[in-house]
Length: 228
Image (cartoon, rainbow, N blue to C red; front, side, top):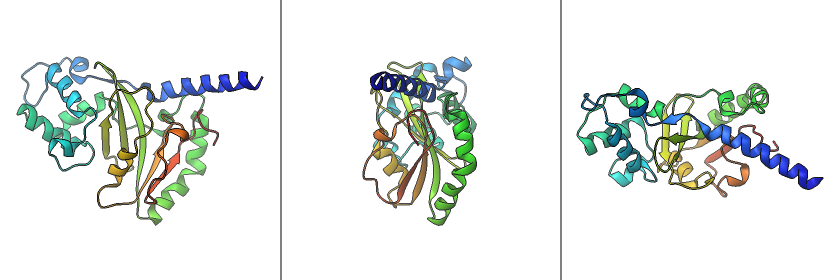
């Protein structure tokens, strides 16, 4: 009986995880039917090449100053790589197509977790906001989405601040990768700024990095894969 319950819980957790990271990310040029040669617009081949340039690499590995990818860093790489000058709205369109648009807390939960997340937002989240403020910390929401239209498919890890700024990385192909320690360290920056992060159900607690510096404080969003 215990084994059956454990298997059932594992199945529910797996379903919840697939919902959380399923996303709707896709190659933007294919989705929008853009015409090659438009000012500041990438062809499908260029966009695929750009995604491969981002996959598993950070901006400083391309000679850029940022530690994680941002809209500005992507625009700088596009200019350097393809001699194009996309406007900010154009780059934002690519990021939205890749699944990096704003998400409500309940959008980060499967159908089985929505009510728990709503209660958590009302009862627990205000204390997290206060704690971040008291520590002078930036508050981010962390999750991932699956980017389709590329081979192999990619997981896009993102951190969205409460002010709406997005930082992200495109992970190298791995089956159920853990939450990267380096991603959180880079979010904190070389200046060691304090950050509080709300982590959605894309990762179980066991997949969080251990022994994080005290300046990095993770908070779990309720999900099927967690007991609390």
